[in-house]
Image (cartoon, helix red, strand yellow):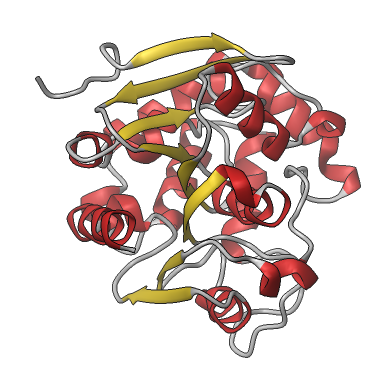
Length: 281
């Protein structure tokens, strides 16, 4: 039976959090970590991947603290690595492959530097990595995409949510669908405390969970697959070139005609790449 949003929904109490997640499949565990943005959830990021990956792995797509249907979290408590470790412990998972989009990729990178014994494979898609100087990206602060994302947090109107979904994609006509815009809008408006906590953290900088120390990237021993969209307007693909240059056991797949959501815009190829990498590396 094809996994659905309802059939896969689960909840777990960890040491510090009540976390909502989606679970499907059996075998080697794989944790899917969503990106940031109002309305971001495990399901909205990975609805097109869970069924395919669950044919080979025991898949868990988690709503991290401060997002989705999981507990709210102020900026002072946004430590998603600690939340991920607590999630593994609560479910009795010794180690797992981690697949993270954007913020989720950043979390997975830091987890690989701080808890290498808990991660078997690392996959990132459009992961930000601190203050990386880019050759072609703008140097005047947040990227175009991040500015739209912050505006949608301040005012999650249908128009701002449409702008947010559109800037995440290369092929807007195909992927920035009314259904996806509505899903993100409903998820955002259902949890106003998540929006409020994010906006309250803006004076302190982008209120994301703790960042990986870029000096530790060369110490990562986990096999790493880096996937990035050539047309990403949120995080420049040059950031992934920096990762490739610094993470020793890494390889990069750069996708043309692809924005920030490689797992959505190129779902079939993404599913094949991840499956082959985790099964054969």
